[in-house]
Image 1 (spheres, rainbow, N blue to C red):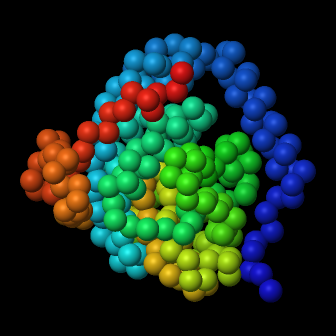
Image 2 (tube, protein in one colour):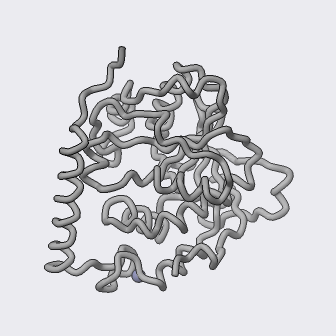
Length: 271
Ligand SMILES: [Zn+2]
């Protein structure tokens, strides 16, 4: 007895994905892409900006967790990191999934959390067909390859369409995603790491956690590439093991209680 809203059928989704590809091809022809950070023509994200992205330190920030056992992000939502995430999410820059996922894998190394599975935050089926991919699932796939932890994109479903969180106030965001997710019974007893691109108020991660908790998941954590929470919501992530290698993030200073370690690994730049 499932309360899953009927999404478009497979054939319809396939057609929508093809229509999106054709539309993007035509748009590229008429309006050549521009680098999402510096604006250089004919790149969605140019090599110089990829190098700049690789130099952004992985800054671990622990966000107010509520019903999760922990939520973390690898940096503030600004500058080249924000532009890379936007190119990745809204402008078809799927090649950015590798360097962005490398940040998540580095953060996971530094944390003392342990997981059974990775669960990307799902998109509603129609939205995924329109975009052609789920950005969180792409990130999760790369993280799985780097860490050896299984990614299970099938344990969570978005059971209704929701508005884009980016356009809403904090209260609207909470209401927008309330009861929007359903989890599979297979999560019972498992420790789950939710993966998302951006955490703003954390509402989406919390709703996913509620759905997982309802099906008996054990400990539940969340990680996002960036967060756009104000300083008062961000608290220090302390880890004695890694503290020596961390340095204070100058952008946030002591008030932000953010620590980071050098994450600029040239190896994360795709060829
Ligand atoms: Zn550029």
